[in-house]
Structures are given as structure tokens and as C-alpha cells.
Amino acid sequence: MRLASIEGLGGLTIGRLAREVDISKSGVFAHFRSKERLQQETVEAARRVFEREVLEPGLAAPEGVARVASLCEAYLSYIERGVFPGGCFFAHLLGEFDARTGPIHDEVAALQRGWVGLLEELITTAQERGELDPEVDSGQLAFELYAPLELANFLTTLYRDPATLERGREAVRASLAGAMAPEGGSSRAGPASADS
Image (cartoon, rainbow, N blue to C red; front, top):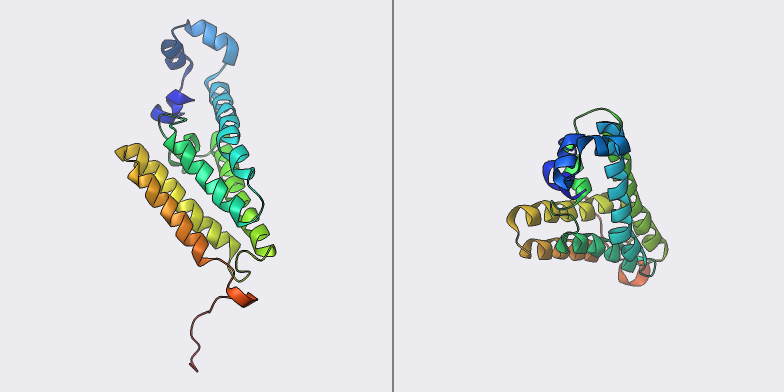
């Protein structure tokens, strides 16, 4: 996982892994049997790490807007702590497999839909609790929260500058603040009408 987060999953081969861990190529082959299985098991192992490092702590917060904010912070913390040396394992896969076809592409797409779908679900719950404006498009807000998370990941990995993470945190705070339910229960003002 650590190797693939830097060099890409496509470069992760039986021979490359054997050199990295200093065991025989036949020993690695005996376990995985193919490059494809090695890649699939690497993605599955990284998914378990993501669940442990991001989903579990993020979802431990009380439901509502606190849980939305907590999940975003858990992701930024995962980057900040350098769980993978190449930044988010799955963000790396997006860039590597977005235009390809095949089982890895399909798995990456499904995991990505699940992550954004979870954000949207948590936003909807916060709306139902009266914490976020019910007029807000939950899918759009999920997109607006996700975008700075990924940009913070890429730029923090590129520049090694922790200030980039703070920009990500501020973007999340601003997006949530802009979506809060208004006082008194009325929806946020929409575009001005032609009569006004």
C-alpha cells in the first residue's frame, strides 16, 4: 500500500514487491498468483485502513452537522498524519485509473461513489435534524465539501506544506457555515426575483 501510494498501483508488480520486501519473486508469486490479484488485495487492504483511519473516527461524532464536520476532519487528519507517504491512497488511484477500464477502475469508481454518497447521506440527516438548510442541494454540498479535501490532499503531498491543510479546513468550515439552517426556520434567500 505504501509503495503504491507513491509509485501507483500499475507499477506494483510481483517483481517490484519482491525487491521492496527483499524476498524471492517466487515467494511473492506463491501468495498472490498474479499481478491483478496483488493489485486487488492492495486496494482491499487500503480500504480497511481508510475505514479505520477516516470512517470510524469520523462517524463517531454525534449525528447531524457535527458528524459531517467530523468526517471531513478525519480525512484531513489522515493526510496530516501521513498514513500513506503518497497522500490518500484512493485519491492517487483516481488520477491513475479514471480514464481506464477494467476491474480496478470499477472498484475505484464504486468506492468513490460510496464516499461522496456517505457525505450526502450525512448532510441529509443534518437537514432532517434542522441543522442544515433543507433548501440546500445535499449532492452539491457534498461535492463542495469533497473538493477542498482532495485539493488539500494533493497540494499537501506536493508541497509538504501544512498550511494547505488549514486552507482545506477553512473551506469545509465556510461551506458548512453557508449551509446552516437560518434562524426562525425560513429557507436561505434565493436569487432576487424580477419584481424586487
